[in-house]
Length: 419
Image 1 (tube, rainbow, N blue to C red):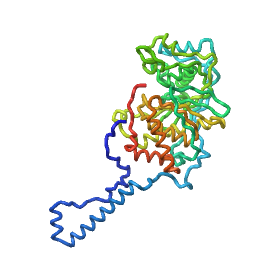
Image 2 (cartoon, rainbow, N blue to C red):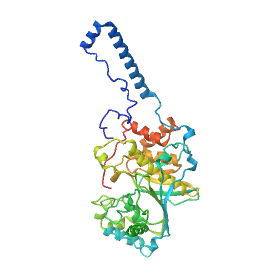
Image 3 (spheres, rainbow, N blue to C red):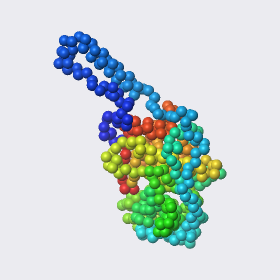
Image 4 (cartoon, rainbow, N blue to C red):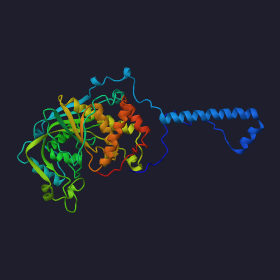
């Protein structure tokens, strides 16, 4: 874990709980001061009393800061939001038939090859249910985090498996989205977003539907444009998955075909890494853009409350929308290091915020941490500890708590890696 840039705790925004706030003019214990005090006993007595009073105030404030319960950690029950009545706001709801929309111009030749390989002589699948959702942070911030039964949070190895629905469970898979949904898919990059689209080629056509709408420039709200600072997310249901591309299979010289290696691979290599399904599977996808601040990544800054709020807001909106669209089944979400990599977020921060949102929304997670298992486990343990110590903590209380303890918990921005 990188060494914190400073060992000094950050000053609270309002400065009111600083242990030094009462010591405006501390007594100067220099020899000249003590000499003057000895010549004037009454002044010496008054000064010593003032000094003792200041010292007492300092000790009380210091001990309180260390041991007393932080506030606000929770809101009185009489003023809390009614969580059971909460619903996300539906911004757009459309049905998109990929078979009726021409595909975009796929610029990368390897992606063109893969598209043709997976779709040759096949339908692109049934119409896709597309919806965009948001929430208002002021309406969710006083909800209690740990109101629901503790969900199943399972650690998984490898990469997303897209499990199929069962009679009791509806399975969803995350899309590590850009604010311009699927916007980089026609190009040469092959990160999680582009990988997912290539296995679900109908999503190329969904992207083209977004582009056609943009060209018309008539819609009050344009599909496929999400604001990561306002908790906006998208759900895509009943998307046909035509194959599996193994991005971790060893490839001579390249290592694998993930990320920027994809466009360098031969078509024979891509063919050897691809399994074409005889019968397409069905996927449900959660597209969730992550907030990004490159300057804080480069400076390795600690997270502040606004940073944490932007991330949590999107996650909670997404997980709540998933629950609302799971038809009374148990919602299970496959997720992982969302917002890391090209967006530079901290693996531990992303894990703990997603686990906290899963507890608040009441969904199960299958978490794929890739090679950052330790960070995932630390985030999981931290949320469990906070839940045990503060069972009535609110969403806003958690984010305040994490900001105040960012240095202690080592909650620093990560590094941008280009994928």
